[in-house]
Image 1: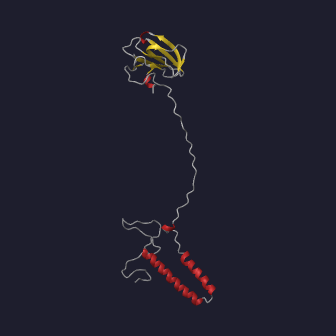
Image 2: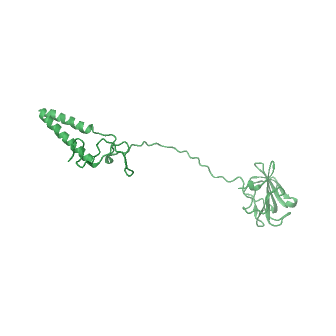
Image 3: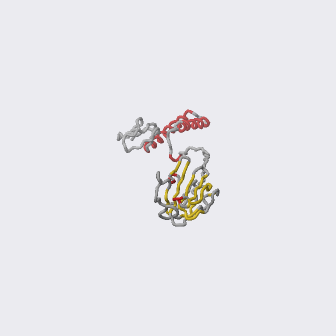
Length: 236
């Protein structure tokens, strides 16, 4: 049996009221912030209470409104008051929830694609270990290679010297388009002439041991406006 005023059962277990906010009191309870908390008991009691009130008011209208048109109008107003004013905007019903409409936005992405280009400098012969490094007294690097290996300019340029030069033996010197000068020494053969324009597709000579040399290798030097440059600082 329920207390009609407080909606409390005889066991004195207090039920949540329809408009009461749920407040979490224990760590294992989940609260829905800013929404009305419903329990099954409260929903059933609410429905019974509304039905009882509707029946009482309907009897009152029948007794006091003899005209059928007045009764229908009164019933319509009654239903509006009961259901229309009972709407709670802060109550979410799972089955009737509709997700908000998200406006579609077109995003244009401008991508810049950079094509891979060939390096400005490349090794004159296949990359290998260095037998003699750059120093104050040795203004280049020595790269070992098999006798007769083709030698190519490390960058585009024009031949300014192609002949024998003392301890360098047979040597080719090239002035490049950017102002650098490169030297290729100890060649076995020279395949270019002075004034010839050369690029990576040209073979300017072949590996040898001419001049002061202890074995087949390429002595390679690079020079700038301020003097010798360590080729390893330029080569890729």
